[in-house]
Image (tube, rainbow, N blue to C red; front, side, top):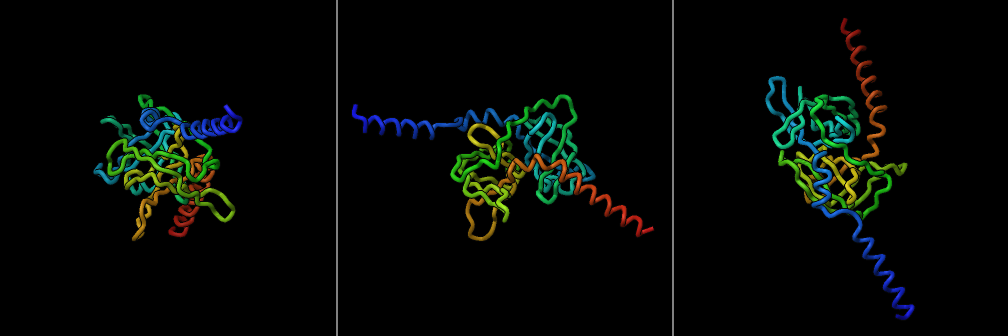
Length: 231
């Protein structure tokens, strides 16, 4: 074989190896689906309000969007007709991320592996997994379409062509190695827009405890000031 053909063959092998990286969607689904749960919310009378999704990120802890919980008096994590009562642990309303917990020792759902969302690239293949319209465990796939950044180049949102619908909020956006890269948050419903879906970068989870404390401290300080004024 000539040197030219050998170099060409090596290039093709590298190309094929690159496109074959990561798991097939069916294997990926089996890997991460035990960690994605349906969230059902209820009012003061125990009547159903809304539904959404949540992802297990640590033992007995899940991340979701705060708007999924809304004005609910209580909420539950549901999968395959099994239900666990949840409680709110940390809240970041500005970023729409809430950490919830399940105290029940029978809750054995495994945490997902977390990716570094600062290392994402446009064109990267991803899957979304959630519960649109309470349809449990709905899988879709697509690409990272755009990485939305702030003026100081911090990642603010992951735009993807992987479609999701209301009820998918709080679900997971995963890379093809099964690592969680983002929390599916919203769909662009502006007139004329098509397949514009956005997820929050998972690296924000690291900042959630500090941001939650600051926001709760501000809330309680404001409430104390109101109560003092009312006396």
